[in-house]
Image 1 (cartoon, rainbow, N blue to C red):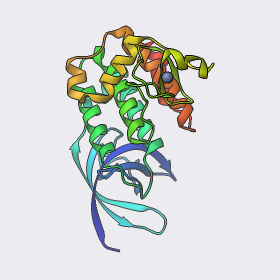
Image 2 (cartoon, rainbow, N blue to C red; image 1 turned 30 degrees about the vertical axis):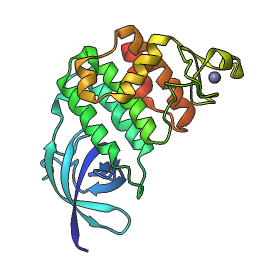
Image 3 (tube, rainbow, N blue to C red; image 1 turned 135 degrees about the vertical axis):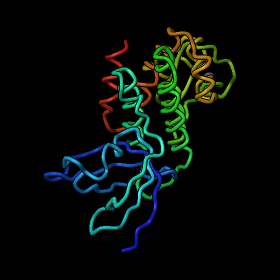
Length: 249
Ligand SMILES: [Zn+2]
């Protein structure tokens, strides 16, 4: 079989047999690709430490009988700083865990790759104080790209513009105005500051979020809301998100 090049972000490593590893990757077009790195867990593997989660790599692959097989790997962006302390590792783990759940084989979403690398770059270069704001911005943007964009600027039920905070309905997919607040008895509390800051995170670049993060209290409210939003829309449990929430709250 001919080989072909693929630039991808390493999302996860899974052991296979005695010394092999299955890599879950997200390609630059946002599709998920699984490939075997043979002998990766042998001492002195020719791949060295290049195929770690959070790394962006240039690969040569060939199509094997059931999975793609990695024949060569070159590092593009190691993101080594994300592996150097627990908080950054936990934040980056949320990013790759969510990407593993929302990226699909054969279904491109090219914006996901740009979002992923911008988030990992900002997490690596930013202070720990801004890392939670970056995680929340990633979560709300990734869910929007996945088809679940929370309505934050107008009422999710009647489309009026009288949303001044108060209630957020998972069923309706966004903020509710005071008149519609009773439509959903299970609506979540959404303070006005959190509503406007979440809209800011949805609409800002990662570089801007890193430079001008929301106040910590608003970030916490946005994070809590996004956890509920994701749990409502994604069937899979996100262990990395649960861990990160426990670590920083
Ligand atoms: Zn309304």
